[in-house]
Length: 405
Image: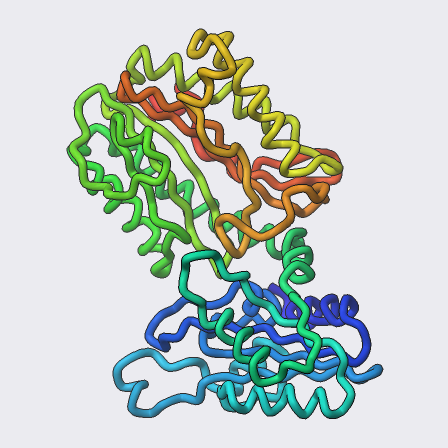
């Protein structure tokens, strides 16, 4: 990534904010020993920090940026990795003003900004879901409202999400590297498929390939599902036997500098695809290729998913997998596409029209429990000015390609 990309992103956010406003972007995990960080905080700063808050103020024409971060604890640093030193934080983010992390200090800052005449306070957070406890960022919202009831608190996240929805060429380069690592790991699995006796062995081989790439990890729980386990969408036990002539589904990715690949492939336990699985696989592949061809600027993600269902039904009916539309829900019961980015299911309004730079998945599936067969094929697609580019086109998915490995 170019050195000043994070400054450019903050400048783009500043342009969206009115004069006399404050933006607050927290990255709160609650546990300094964990690695999770807020993707939008990282997007704007380049810092994979938790327990940190970015504050951006726009007072008339004067713009100011401050990061509240945890100080390095010399005792804790004997036990766990410390956050980077301040010089490194400043160099990476381009933000010079660093302050000690403290919610009380933040509240004092907001109070003082309000006293100076700041009118609008924009806060990034994920809205609380019913029956779930508040996250730390949601708790921050509640605390601000309780201690500063007179300020105008506005939800900032949709503005950031729209900025994140369209990727730059530099971001696409990071996607391609994540996909390269994923490809190597999957091809390695394909080439060793005859030796696998249990799902855990596939999982171990895949994970080892990522670890050998400077300790990379998947951005989500890898799914290795053999036989009828593949009919369970989020199966992740990864510890069942793999029987001869059964199919194995692997849904996996790689987090590369925060950017995620998300790929699904299926392969036979033996050298060749079993006949029944081959028939279903070819139908899913045909449907996927037709859905991918429908991607272009000016259509929405919601339209792609709606049209995908029609495409899938037509293809599966022609293949005599289903007879009626009502039957489709018995063998296909999920969406065909989602945004991809700093989060695997990335942010963005589904009804917004796609623009060049949007990245999404295409992943139709067919799950026939009575046959013990679940097939899903997933690729990562970049929207371009002329249509699309399949970023993961080189990962084998045609039957002849897989059987030849």
